[in-house]
Amino acid sequence: MSFNLCLLPREDKYQIQLDYEASFWAYQIKRNKKTREQVYNTIHSRPVAEQTVLKQKFEQYLALMLS
Image 1 (cartoon, rainbow, N blue to C red):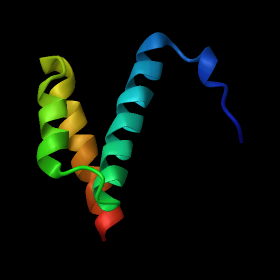
Image 2 (cartoon, one colour; image 1 turned 45 degrees about the horizontal axis):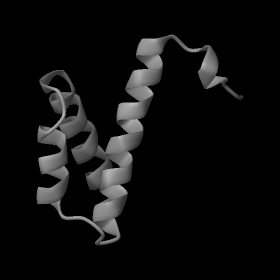
Image 3 (cartoon, rainbow, N blue to C red; image 1 turned 180 degrees about the vertical axis):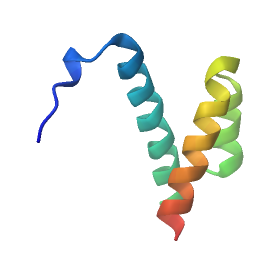
């Protein structure tokens, strides 16, 4: 099964981008390239509407990668 992401609505693309960023930050922590504090500073520099989603997704991916 394949999906063409270009055909998705703008909001869905935006949610996928947030998900991608959160997973990348978790990967960086796993590889010791960033600290949790650095990631949270980055999250807090984002718009308030994104912060909750990014924190939840980041913690979800981090738990998955560190288990």
